[in-house]
Image 1 (cartoon, rainbow, N blue to C red):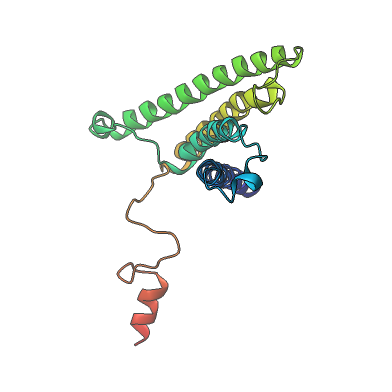
Image 2: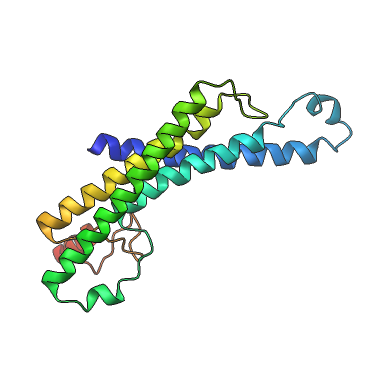
Length: 192
């Protein structure tokens, strides 16, 4: 499971980092071509494909980022009504919601897989990159099935342990809070 978690995080970080760098280079190229002494060097470089690639990278990042959001509990949710329900009924309502999410994403994944399979039989390519269109749209079934898996994973964990993933907005990874019991900073303070 850790391999899948790490692969998901690496894919998201690589996509967003690569897209940001590519857009920066394309914008710099666009403006530096206007500098007279750089014109002969930069004009022959064709970066017309950069915008299309960045769009595809952000779409892939968003599909896998949604699955990451389910796993870590960072999706926005309105739970005011759920929190006032009795605990036994609350558990059933939460599990029902998680299974609805799994059902929806599995339907989207299946429809996306059928669409991609249909595209594989054609010669359609993307306009600038000229990669097969089915590769571009492959993020729909892959991301949706991963998100379905994450919904089922969270539902199983909640059923077993009565705990949903929750993102603490005040926590910064890699920074110890000296006031939190059990932190390295608190242990060092106790030794003094």
